Image (cartoon, rainbow, N blue to C red; front, top):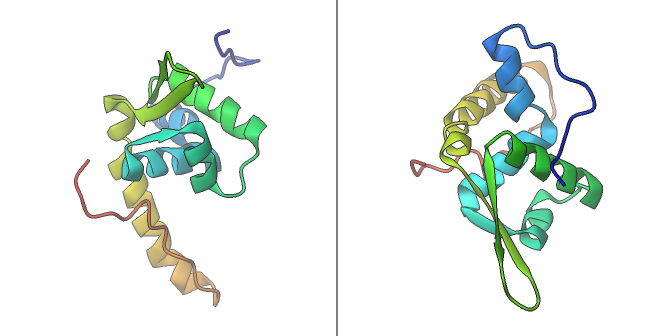
Length: 128
């Protein structure tokens, strides 16, 4: 069954379109994890995401696939094997997320006494 949003978004500018596709806590984290790991099975992705529920992960993966950022590949094996990876469109989002991460890291330090843990997924040096 194809994922379908309950309501069509009233998107009025390119920024809103981008944030709809890759914004938010879970979509951006999934993209960063897959950028670092390249290909993951559902259980591996779930493990990398730590505190996401199965329902939220499944829904978010469907959204990212529907929007052309991820690809889901099924293998005809027993037991069944499914792998997720970024499309070229998904890979093109990674530098944007890295820039947001660097910006946030710079300003977060100035505004709070609590240290922010550097995400090892966003800041990898290799080019995607």
